[in-house]
Length: 296
Image 1: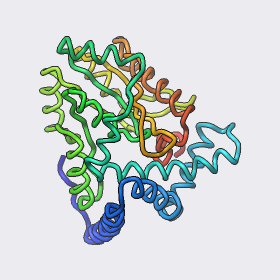
Image 2: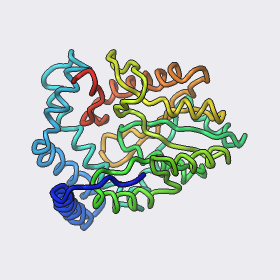
Image 3: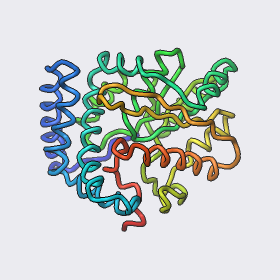
C-alpha cells in the first residue's frame, strides 16, 4: 500500500509524536517484564487516555451499545480499557518476554478440534479475531504449536511509528501481509498452501455490510467469510483473554463457523465476539469508533 503524501506540518506532528512514543517505550523496556507491563498500562490509562479523549469516546460507545450498565461499571471500564491497551502495546515490543507468556497460555474451546483437524487435513484456516485482550498472543501461541500462521495488518498512519511497529509485530512471528493488492496476492498463495491466516475484523469498515453488533447496525467487513468460501478454509473465531494477574492469557477458540453465505457467517462472528465482550467488557478496545456511520 502506497504511503499517502504528508504535508510538512503533519510530518512534523507525526515525527514529534513518534519521538514521545519511542521515549516512553524505551523507558518501559528498561524495567523487568513484570514491572513494565503494568507500568505501561498505568501510563496509558491515567495519563494518555484523558489527554487523547479516549475516556469520553469509551463512555460514548458504552452509552450506545450497553446503556443499562451503571455508572460505577462505566468508570471501571473507562480506566481498564486504556490499561489493557497500554499493556498490549508494550507486550508487542517485549518480544521473547511476551512470547513466553503467550506460549504458556492454556488453549481451549469448541473450535480447537476443528483447528487441529484442518491442520491434519492440510486445509487452510482463517482465524478471525478482534481487538480484545492481546490479539497477538494468539499468533505467538499457535506459531509455537506448529501452525503455519500468517497475519494481515493495516499500516499505521504515522509512518515513523509504523516502521518500528511493523518490525515489532514481525518479531512475534511471520509471515505478515500488509493490507493492499500485494498483501492479498501473498494471502491467496498462503491459503492455497494450506496455511493459517489471522485477521482482525472488528473495526468500522465503510465499504462493508451493515450487520448487527450489540443490537446496533455496524459496518462490517466480509473478507474473512469471502476468503473462507473461496478457498474452502475453516473459519474459526479465536481470542486471547487477559487473565486477572494482568500478564497471562487464555486462548479461547470458539465454534467453527459453518459455510453458508458471507453475511450469515460474519454475523455469527459478530455474535461470538459480542458474547465475549459482554463477559469481559474491559478487554475490548472501546476506544475505536465501531459504530461510526450511525453516530454521525
